[in-house]
Image (cartoon, rainbow, N blue to C red; front, side, top):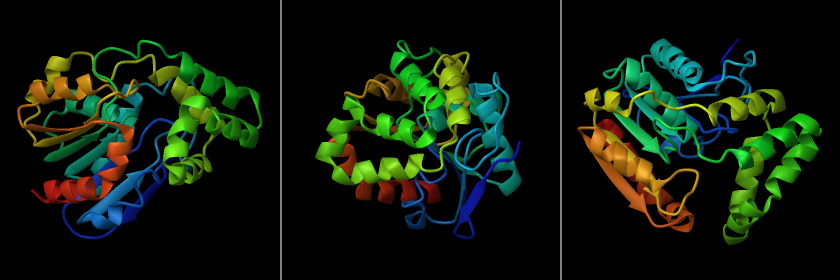
Length: 252
């Protein structure tokens, strides 16, 4: 299995970026030019342009190995993880608490418990497994829970379509089936050994990425800073400020 990697920028620090479920290395590509140093974006197994892995190998332990392989290959000392990517980094930190010098978790989705109700994710997997890719993606983008956000933020529909354009239906469906039933870390107390400064960015009212996860992480991680936003609309409005904050944080 081969992982697809794209590198932006030069010099220090070197930051690895781990994307969310169903997305690809394009997820944060628009913002990496504003972040200093070398940015190493990659696609997880079965996502984007990376190779497929066998069914049964899309759990957080497997995804953590993807992060570790890329970070070690490029000498990354910083890590940014979004949603599933945050969980993969978290799992890696459970084994190697001192692996990174600075960490950013954007919308972390879970800790030591699986998602309570995976039915919405299962519906997405079913569409990917049963329909032609183009039709499946159109159906996914038209789902009611997505449409409201797109109506309020029209640019978001195009952004979502862009992230889906390189989706591998088989790999993404496998990842959905497995990762939503897994735990990012076996024991949350393992994170108490992570002394690296950690920036947590969360929003209230997000059922997939509960703000409570960020609050728990802020208590567990000895050097954590939590930024809480009130809604998805506020998150989008704050993107310029958040990018600036992340850029300064990574430099330390």
